[in-house]
Picture (cartoon, rainbow, N blue to C red):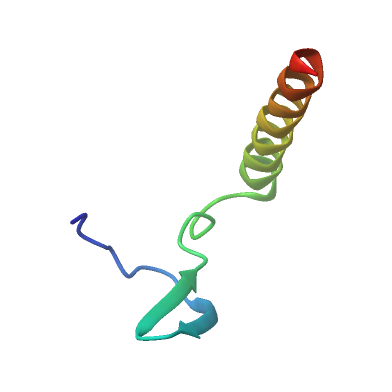
Length: 58
């Protein structure tokens, strides 16, 4: 099992049966707005590539 670092703040918490899921904002802690925009753009680019690959298979 992977070790979890608890940096940042809990921004959401869910309970699914016996499993507690905590969502932290540590990916953005200490980042500039430009850094965060870059991360979000990369996420969007990856998502669009996945969608395009799925559409090409159909």
